Amino acid sequence: MIIVSSKKLLVEYIQDYKRNKKKITVIPTMGNLHPGHLELMKRAPKNTIKIVTIYINKLQFDNLNDFMNYPKTYDLDIDKCKELNIDLLFIPDKSFSKDIKEYKNINLPKFTNYLCGEFRKGHFTGVYSIVRYLFNLIKPDYACFGLKDFQQLLLIKFIRDTYFKDLKIIEVETKRDKRGIALSSRLNRLSNDEILNIEKIYSCLNQVKLNIKNNISFHDIKPVAIKELESSSIKVEYLEHRSNDTLEICNDCSLDSSIFIACIINKVRLIDNIQI
Ligand code: PAF
Image (tube, rainbow, N blue to C red):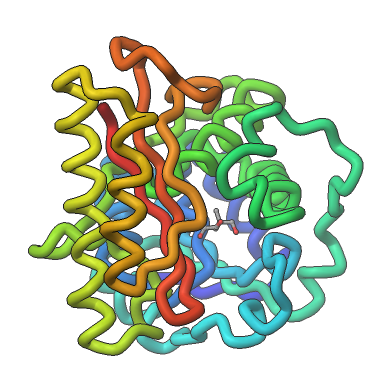
């Protein structure tokens, strides 16, 4: 595996791959890799050059502390990428942040104002800025992203549809542990007791889904579900039933839709979703 920290060198490798008619898959990450990330890597199409990027993108954090404390586990991450036969790992040096244009005044689709967009100001502009930059730099044929960050995935598809029409986005199912907990780097910050508690998030999503399938109105289920979670010290930021393509509020369960949740447990913010 080649490890590159200079943008110039990365561009040279990309030019070389392109000259040799190789297809490229990119897996953008912020590091602290867990089995969910490894699942993204495993889904990269065979016979493509697999490039993982590790860059903790300050622009997408609405909280400086969160950014400063974001776990950095570069040595472990390098081992994991090697095990999965990644061809090139890009961990940019400090100068990289100066190159990224921040699209502060860009008009993003309406759905970026909902759900996480409502609670994390500037988050999706930050994601937009880095992902558009990376796609421009690497010019991938494929890119892998997880369905756990469903709203982010919609934004990535918007970037693809606007600027990179030939790029294929590979959508990867949320990786869960045996208890159904959606894997996330943030779980490292919770105690064992707190982890036991958050099993309730996925069971709550399943319960809500079942009720909707049984034609019980989401409007009636929502307060009961929130009360149940909050009785276990899980503070619910949002619990919403929204359509999968526009993220508009959904009153008709026959629509292609999902239940979305964000909650906070001891200052750690987790998101999850389930398709109806
Ligand atoms: O999903 C993430 O880890 C990040 O939002 C991404 C896509 C790597 C952009 O920084």
